[in-house]
Image 1: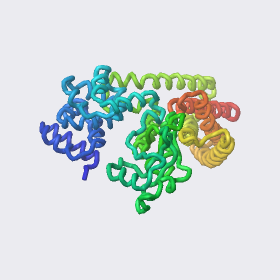
Image 2: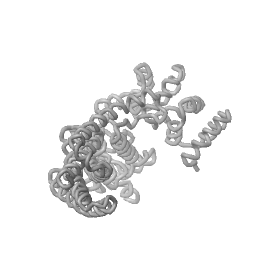
Image 3: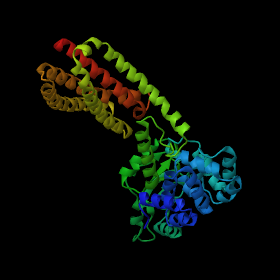
Image 4: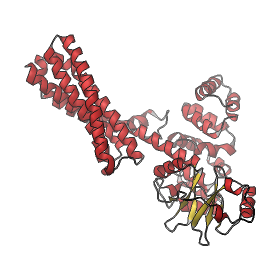
Length: 445
C-alpha cells in the first residue's frame, strides 16, 4: 500500500540528506505515476532533479504528464537531449497533448515523429481544438460497431479488448455517424443472433467536440455512464470522454479558480525561483495597493471626524472585516454557480433576493451584537448605534455586490474568480468606511 504523501516526502528528504540515492529510488519504485509526480513537485529543486534522473526511463513520460507545467519544465530542461529519443519510444498522442505546452519545438518535432501514423492523425485532429474544448481531450480507445451488428459481434469485440471505463458499445451508421449505444450488461446473456439495435439505450447524452471541457465533464459525471460519445457537427463519432479524464478536467478547473482568486497561476511551482514567484505575484499586489489607496482616500475625507472621535479609528477594521467576509461568501457561491452553469437570467432575480435576505438577517444579528459590545467598551450608546447601522449597511451591500460583480464580470468575459475578490474587497471597504465615518460625523460630532 502506498504511503501517505507527507510521510513519503519526509522519508525521501531524509534519505537524500543521508546521501542514499538508492533508498530514494527504492521508496518510489512501488508508487504510481500520480504519486511520483506529486512527490517530485513537493521536493526542493536539486533533490527533485536528482530523484528524476534515477527514475526508470520508461516511466518518465507518464510521470511528466501528471505534473504541473512549471515543475515539469524544470525537469525537461534538466534532461539531456540524448535521453529523449528513448523516452519518446512509446509515447501516444494523448500524452503528447498534455506535454505540448511544456516541450520546446525541437522536442515536439522529435516526439511527433515517434508517433505512428494513426497516433499522428489523432494528434493533428486534437490540436484543431483549443484546450478549453472537449475535442482536445477525447480518447480514441472505445468499443464501436456498425448499427447492423449482432450480439455475437459484440461478444467477439469484448473478448479482444475492453478499454478502461467502458460500459457501453457505440453503434455507427455507414458514414461513421453515431446512432445509438448498448450497455455491456445488456449484451451478456442475450442470444447471440439478436441485433444490438434491439438493446440500445434511450436518450443517451452525446457531447460535441466544441463543448466546453468543464461543462462536458460535469455532464458526464451526472450521466451515470463511465464514458460518453463525442461527435462533430455532422454527428460523426470522433471518440469518447471517460470518467477519469472528466474528473481530472473538473479538478483542474477547480484548482485554477482557487489559485486565480489569489491572483496566482495554478501551474506555479512550490519551489519556483524567487524572482519568478515575486514577478508573478507583483501585479496583483500592485492592483491591491491601488485599491487600498482608494479606500484610504475615502477615509481621508473624514480626517476631522477621526481626530475628534478616536474610537471610530479603533472600530473601523471591524466594519471592513465583516463586510469583506459576508461579500466573499456570496461571491464564492455565485462564482461556483457560474462555473457549473447554474446561474442564469431565469434565476438571477430570485438568487439576488435570497442573498439580500441572508445579508439582511446576518446584518441585523451581528449589527446588534457589535453595537452592544461597542457601547459597553467605549461607554457610548451613540457609538453603538453608529457601528450597528454601519455593519448592517455594509453586510447588505456586500451581499448585493457579491451577486452582481461576478455576473457582470462574466458578461464582460473577465474571469470572476481572478478579479472578483479584489473588486469586492474595495467595494466593501469603501462602503463600510463611508457608512461608518459618515454616520459618525452626523451622530457623534
